[in-house]
Amino acid sequence: MEIKSFDVLPRDLVLEVLASVAANSMDDFFNAKISCKTFNELAEENYVYRQISLDKISRILWWHPEEGKAFIERCIKCDNLEALYTQGLYEYVSFMKVELGMELLRRAAQIGHLGASYVVGLLLVCEGGELQKEGVQLLRKVYASGRVVECRKKYLDVVRDMWWNNTTIFEGEPPRYECRMRSEHCKRRGWVSDIDHYDNTECEQCICRAEIEILYKYKYGRHP
Image (cartoon, rainbow, N blue to C red; front, side, top):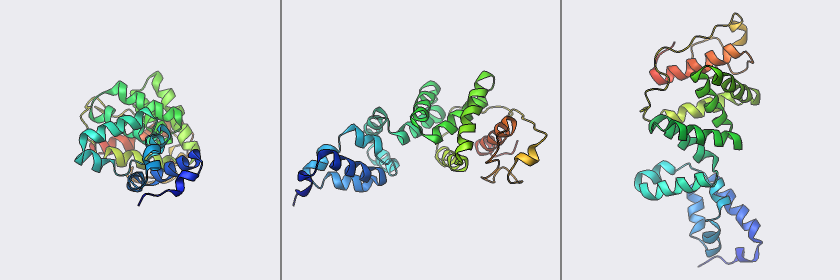
């Protein structure tokens, strides 16, 4: 039996409810979508696609690749931050479309995705030269938020399941960044596998060294 009670509520309120459901669970969103005509219509709003969770997207892409691809493209078009972030990494790392990947990641960072700011900063630091300064500024922003460990872990979790087809990334020996105050700037002394390694410092050399260490270790399985 079709639910009628939502028909008497303001459209904006129902849209907000549906967007909240979508942001928390893709399964609950699709169940809500088929439960009544109102939800089914509102489910196509850009605002909902901007909020929707991508927690089960890998399952959709595996079983329904064409529908999954179209879904991701719609999410990106609507500025879904997780879609921009994840697809940006895939484009950059796996599909070797560096410019497109960076464009998506920068877009997510500009809208407010802190994890994207971390990744863009990381990649720019690796580029070196003038781009390194911009990269450090972005990483300082993440450090200042107190969420660098969270952003670092998210990045590592995402790229761990990717094919590293772009062999031009992080090739050769990592750059060296030395700081005489390193022992004071480092919160925890230990190997780079400690996820808290350097999570609170404003030192440019230590920021670069810490993030490069982590990146190279998880890319090549070694400690620089």
